[in-house]
Image (cartoon, rainbow, N blue to C red; front, side, top):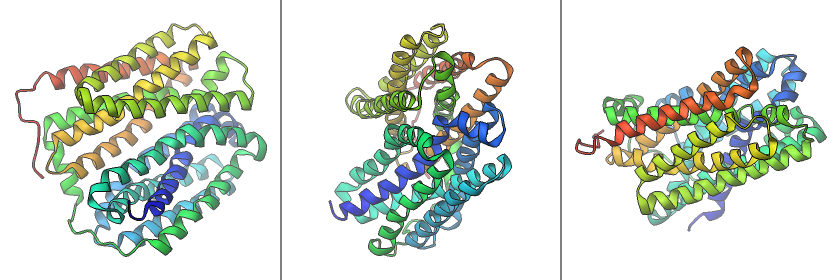
Length: 388
């Protein structure tokens, strides 16, 4: 594969962006204590990043589609690095919230552009592998970034984590500057073109499935550290080790979910993945605070969630075969909407009830996604695609 190392460094950039997005989940209580806010309020920092990425990235990409992709990637990575430094100096919750919005906008845009640039740097027959490498960087942020950040936060403090990630982000920035040529898009994709696929009812239903199963995931995972701590007194090392285990489960789920979707079809894997998620969340709600039951249940739940993701994206492509890039772009926005929606719901559950009720709220959202999938897949006799 041509420019292999440049693609790997782009994946590093996406890994660091993903780590910045998800790392709050592992240090939520530490951030809340430092900023003098509640745990549920600190969860808004996850919501702010996800909403900014979901709403802002498609608009920025559509508005700047004629601008050299190299220049845009350098600009977005530069803003992302500056916002990471800004997080270190943010004295209040409000300032930190603004910082997270900037991080979400720049990081979300940089992620999408990095995938597009990677496909232009390699041979046509290796484009799928290049996109897979970039997405591997994103999933690896859960496997390595979040647990490593949780552990290091005890050593250097949570604010210093943002400085370290900002400094590491200079590596892919310099690689883009030195090795990526000027790239202009040959096909203009406007915001209107992206929104036009919403005229198709099947696509809207599929996006709703994405929204609710990711929402069910985010409801619990955003508050995973305090949830575990509420059931057992864990040291920073133990917590980071458990988060690493969960991250590895997400990696395994994504790997095997894609393989099963290829052999059995995406519908089978979506059904299976959603069923596993709903079942594990229901059992988790009944676990009664038994940490040795909670950990394996969450492991299986993580595998089910991430096994659903590649199947759902493959199904989205089948619904819009003439515009797969647009379908994936819109689905990516709904993934971020799901993170924002779930973290907000989780915060309300904690404030109104208790952290132990997160399993129930996640269960009902995933159950809704499963029912929508049953409804969607029942209409196989109708056309499955739109032309954009």
